[in-house]
Image (cartoon, rainbow, N blue to C red; front, side, top):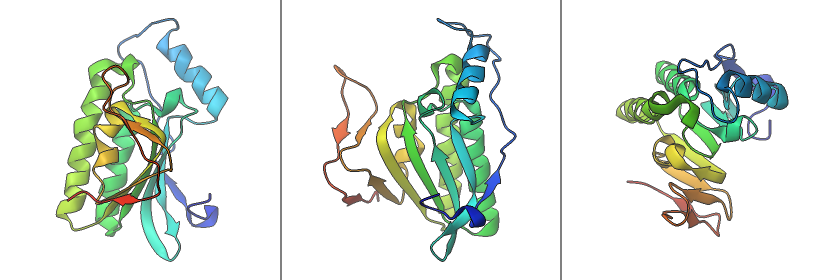
Length: 186
């Protein structure tokens, strides 16, 4: 709501929900974990995507929400990002994604890890179509999200003092951003 006035935002793929094709169980059955997180967060998944206005500019927007399984990227997150990018290409719009995530969703195993390639391929198509992608990384943005779409921006922004990294200590590749500086990838 702070980024894009609600009256201009049209959500995409709101009906999409994760499932449990692997019948995963750790301390909790994954289906139950999904249900509990949906109830707690009020969301179907860790990302909301849509088309809206930022100022006078129409853009494709994706926002991860840490309250749903730590903003982790599962199959639905990857699919919603890919669909957002496809819609943006069709409408000739730039894309802005705000990331806050613990990384890829372990309960979906390789299905989650495949989303890294899917999101990167979609954003590569956006670039081939000469449309900009702005990545905004909030605290924290880590794991498979960092290793894929959050670092692919034409312009990458980080929240002040945000933890941005791929792996935690002792294998740290993390960096703390202590300023509001813009980092451009070429």
